[in-house]
Each structure stands twice: as structure tokens, then as C-alpha cells.
Length: 69
Image (cartoon, rainbow, N blue to C red; front, top):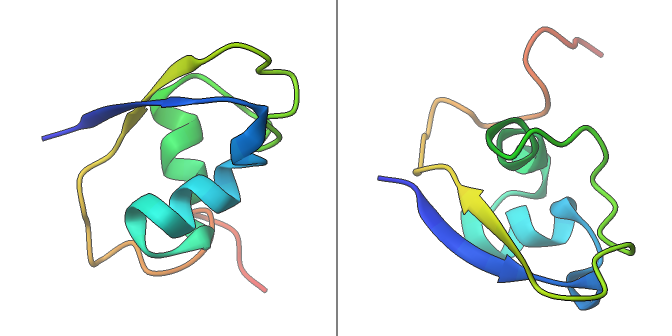
């Protein structure tokens, strides 16, 4: 079940949010996708903004889907 949190510029980026909330910074894109965002930078959020967090998914263990190194 998704969770909602509040973030501001103090949270720095979706990388930081993903690391703290999902245990994996590479999962930032999952948060972005749920919230119709395409930029992980949170510096423009001067007031608290609600973000929906995805549920834990162990199969999502690395970066964006469809992107290979």
C-alpha cells in the first residue's frame, strides 16, 4: 500500500528520499513515476509538498527500467 510523505528542498532530491524511505537511492524513479515527476531535484519545493511512495518491491533492485549500462 502506498504511503504519503511531505518533502521540501531540505530533502535535497528523490535520490535522498528513495535511500531513506525505500532503502535504495536507485529507486528514485519509482517515486517520480507515481508523482508525475521527471526531475529528482527537490530544490524548488520551498513549502512542503506531498509525495506518494511506492510499496516495497524487492524485484526493483536497481536503476530505471529499460536502461542498461
